[in-house]
Image 1: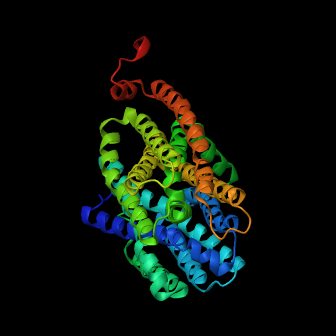
Image 2: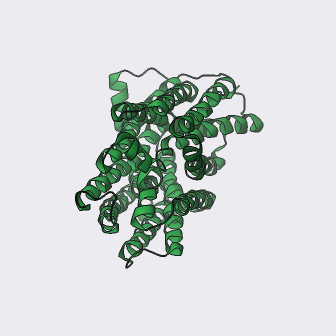
Image 3: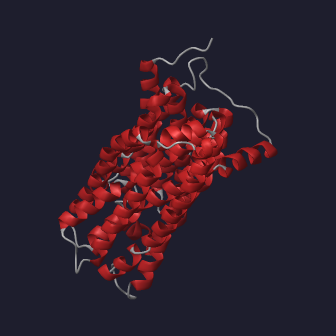
Length: 436
């Protein structure tokens, strides 16, 4: 007889996993407020500065499918421990980096370690909590983990100015070391076993698992949801938000840091609400995401079209609306969970998690290239007009993503009607057509 998960134990394991994800987000986002300092420290251009985040996000995105397969094969605990160790060592290396190549290689491994955290924590949620609580715990994992970005905004700004580059990054590395020990002691894959292994997959088995996950329109719908909603807040939080507010809008560093903090608080605030909505009305998950995309695009259009610098209150509204994209992207994982069998959930989650980071790295690179293109030679900073051009690149990705969401939600609903007419009727509130 299978032992049942204990509530207190489940919460303890989740809190440790959440803390690991929190520190991963902190270390991922720690360059956001250090962008201008990094450009000076390594004597690099905007495009080279973008390369830090592009490389990190590219590695993160490319690692998602292999990580999903690793979790399905070796269990979340082993993969989480490995990722935490890599991330801690990479941040330690970045603390002492004094050349561009050294720093770039360190951020490469930050991306590798970061990629091995979130999928593991979601798998622990699926293993330790009852089905009815999984959407809420998934949203809480995403939004509370984003507190790491808060720590990377105001506190990291203070640490860089008070302690200097090396000591500030050493402190974040020390946090990872503490959590490595906590994970080793506390986290279990199941009640019966500390680490659980899945079936061994050969090359043909891996190809079959990936093909089956990607073939389902629910997985593709989740991918495009994640692609379309996450990137704007991610790009602002990781790199270009701070320079946009300081040089593009003329704000002080403190005011810019406060806006980034408000954005993260917005992400946290919308998470539980979205979890309740998709649990109550699962049929309308894609509609919710399309509304969020339209709202974010509309706010950016207003800010970029504003004559001169936008008023601070409007920038507050912008970051609050952009914050909706974080929990909206988590809806994609719910599509993956409900569209795939349990032994393929981590693989599907990895595929979906690629979406937002592919969009993010594309946007980061485009913004850097456009800024360099629109900034006159010899200028020490980026003019506001250059930021208007650069930030407008986001509209291309929103258009593509919304089109694909509309396309795959129709295919997904048709697939549900074919596979489970009773569930289709229950969720849509309509009788099965043709009397099926």
